[in-house]
Length: 476
Ligand code: NAD
Image 1 (cartoon, rainbow, N blue to C red):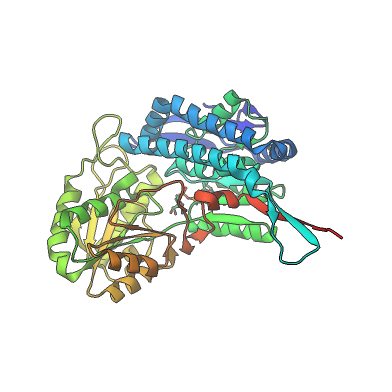
Image 2: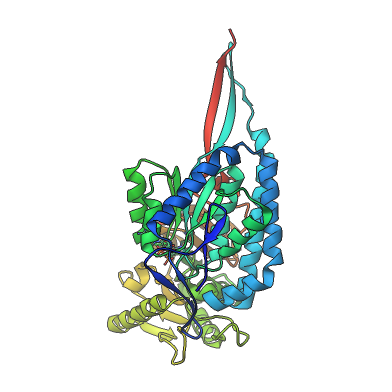
């Protein structure tokens, strides 16, 4: 049983009624347990954040930057332990767990730099009218609730935590019940850096704990990453209290491959877009749109590449893809395999759960999937790729945009003018051209349409935790 709630600068036992099992998905077995935080403990965490806010927001930005640099440094010092825990609890292959850790470190370092630049952003405004002066102040939004999912625990939390602390907000973070141990590192680091008590609080728990936080009247803002169904509940709470919300939700993203592409290169980008993190990515490019002229060459190569992937236990062997992270996700993906069979879809690779211990499925490819198939329209959150063919650029753009989601897309073409033109026409928050999904802290993250509200990363990620104030003075 693990003590895993960090409230007002102290580690405390959970007093909620839910017992949370922390599982190793490669074995399908638990390796730790913890009690969820109670509603009263969520109250205590919000009260602690409220109490810490006046002093924290008054610190100068370079002091906050020093703490953020401390987070980056100490994440590095915990490197091996955090990589192993992600491999064990998420089922991530080592190289993916390493990239997540590096991303979290880069995020804290980046927002330390932005915090250092903050004083120069609080500056005089040039007014055309005579007789007045005005100045801008960028103030922290206040006490923020951060609710995150399980697929990239270190990263998703860093993308919220680092800018929130940089802006001068105090926070209550609720990690996912599927991966509740990984973000404890942030509490341990706060402890070891002497971050003032209450600036960062961590409460673990399931839906009840999340709802207690998102409904709490003591928050000034809630930033949520997760599913659309929970996102809409979180938005209802925000709406009931008329307060701001950032939502990073699901996706059903397209990868568009034109027939002037190098086939092997395209296969590499397509495979990475659907099998990274076993496809459990909001940004998975799970809809492949392939131009008629290249489809016949590409699909068999893609099938072979998917079948060649080494699927296994990341802690026991060298693997390209691990298991799905939870049994619930494994059952969900299996139910889509059943739907595909009922719909009579043409399966070119996989389409089945693996007959072994743990929550494994095979990398899967369905071809010529009808536009109204549930597999084409719904977020599956697994290594399941659906392909359709197109003839013209206009048709590709129309099909890619024909989704209630709008998170990301990838365009593959040797004609860079065309690739840029298509990128501009796609209704999403981020487009890659001839690339794997490289994510840089300086660029934004977030979606259009049903994929959410707001942006993380870059200066936009910081603005999400700031409020703009102007002070105007009559000089007369
Ligand atoms: P989820 O919505 O089930 O859970 C997310 C978080 O919300 C968890 O911490 C959970 O405990 C909490 N929660 C559950 N019920 C709640 C409630 N009623 N009120 C408040 N909080 C509640 O999502 P998940 O299964 O953990 O994650 C997968 C989803 O996250 C996918 O849809 C994926 O696309 C999305 N996601 C989006 C992004 C992005 O940046 N757009 C990134 C990662 C994941």
